[in-house]
Length: 331
Image (cartoon, rainbow, N blue to C red):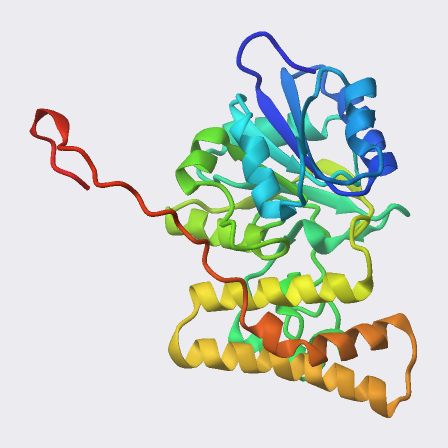
């Protein structure tokens, strides 16, 4: 799967306790990319379930990075991207089955439309139905109000009351979007490097939205092509519903804290908290004991932790710079 010269695309997989799914994903990649020069880089986040050994024995052409600790998704992708040499980098979740022609179509679309910068495709659930998770609309005070008031739950995928879902659009047409999801995301390697990859303060969830916002700030317009199709079994690596929700809301709070200011920031955090609180209250009043109800109660109890978001990365102090050569001024 690795060409002698610069590959067309470097496919990056970050794995965590998903040996069987990762093997199926790698087999689907190996079987459908004959039209491209492809390299595969797998970073295993200390799974301890035989994933790293499977990659080494079954896919010797893939480049394996066996991390001794769980770096999370953002840091894991950034580390894998350091090994990439392709014209493009393609982020894939390891619980994907890549359909024939998907990678070729995505790369061809990116080459034909460089103005978009970030590119995604169409994700399907295992039963073949469309899953909207390949892209999202940007969060706004209105969308967070709809979450807080249960409108986005009652009127799921409604253009007005669930705006982040982008309504009933089936991801079956080319369209510019606010956010391309990291489960299937292609970027020119040069742009990835210019953006410095994911912001590593995010552990998992929110880093792809932040990347899309930063690409748009540079003048790019992220887009979806329906010709790049994958099947996605969501959440294989999430240990519990509580863990997933806590990570999700910490990521949302971090995104809001990074990109919003003043009254908008305070209102956004309040609406996130209110939405979680209302769901937890309804679970208590309804005397529900199911896993979803328990998860909302747990997220409410830990609200102070996730509302604080992830702290900014600690940057190591740099030694004093030497005098710049040839009279060039320091930045």
